[in-house]
Image 1 (cartoon, rainbow, N blue to C red):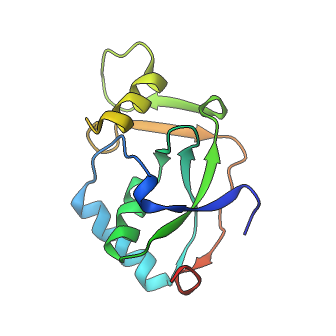
Image 2: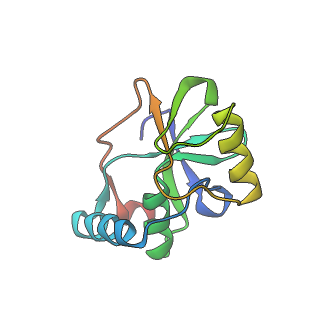
Length: 129
C-alpha cells in the first residue's frame, strides 16, 4: 500500500455530509462486484473528517468491514467548493465543525480537490477482512 495511504478504523471517521441511499447502493454494488476498492477515501488528519468518500465509508460499514484505506491530509492541502448556494464565510472551518458536531450538510454539498491524490489503488476486499 502507498505510504501516504493508511488503514483507518471506520469508527474514527467523521462525516460532514449525509448519505444518499440510492448512491450508497450503487457504490456498495460496484465495490462488492469488483471485489476491491479503487480509490482511497480522503480524510482530514487532525479531526478524522471525511473530505471525499462518504459513500465508500458507508459501503464498507454495510459490508461489516472494520477499516478502510484512507489518504490522510492536512486540510491546507485541499481546495473546497460549495455545490449549493449557502452563505458560509469559512467553508473549511464549517466542514470540520459539522464533522465534529454531526450536524451534517446534505449529500454532495461540498467538493474537495486534492492535488496529486492517489488513485487506482485497487485494494482487495479480502485483504481487509
